[in-house]
Image (cartoon, rainbow, N blue to C red):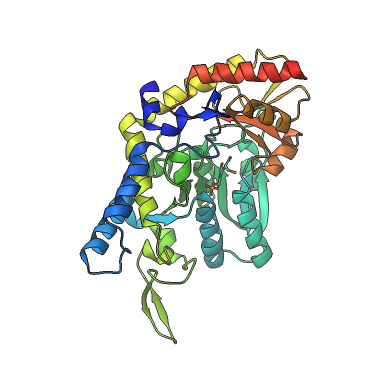
Length: 402
Ligand code: C6P
């Protein structure tokens, strides 16, 4: 995969004018290939006009670009229709949209939402906001000590009041690839729809929402080599049709009077205001980029790299790795002896190595693991074994200092 590094100019940077950048914070955001940035620059320079509004040439062209990006996303997820593809600002907004809109339509006081112990805050707090508004409650799927969902307990969490299950496809801390197809099968057997948080799966392996049979699927553009500020909510048409708009404004209406407003068709009903139509182009080019390389090739490379990293890291004295031994994707959280994660992150940074430290927006999971935070290395298609070696050597240097 090394040849693709040339597409990412930032990878050639020297940190502190000295060390070659070793970028291992890809779960937070990935770097962007030229193809994405150039497509966005080209649109700003040559096409820019507001979409879905003008009869003029540029507006039509910008609209065509945005709608062909929606088709690219549909293909990427293998959704049945572009009506089911809603552009949002990212995973967080996609989950909040479902919480607010699905919640308003289908939930009442005393109803329940099932999430898991390994969720990102966006898949916890969105439901707590609904809890405060409607009086719903949360039920939580526990995890095993090695970071896997307890499906045996999931069965027991369903009651007559369960309205939705919402779980991460891949944990941003543990790297666990959750058996979402099984979660969906169990939930559907109880007549309960499922939202899958795909923030950490879409960058790493092929996703097929129809095969998975999820009811909603959320992901962020910036984690899959696309621009910031754009993401996607996939929803089955039969749910989206019944759900009320999430925000009011231009684009999401059919007619407006002071007495009565009627709403636009899907997916526009959920896209109030001027969308980031340049970012949607960037996202589509990013999805084209990974599709051209092949999601299966990316998955194989990253799994190999993750296994290599686990083996190499285990040779470090005092190393504790969180999460499962296999069945994990591109993320390794660890702690070395009693070296504070912030110290480790800061000192590795001085060697040009970028990792993430802290609670990773998953405080309840930190509590379950019995730690305040961890160090986290996360991989992308452009990372190499040499970079893993640099990480391990860096950790050894820090350990010796302590
Ligand atoms: N996790 C990380 O470093 P946004 O911020 O909307 O693009 O994505 C939110 C989100 C939702 N679910 C999961 C599983 C995630 O990992 C994230 C983002 C980043 O782990 C930033 S906190």
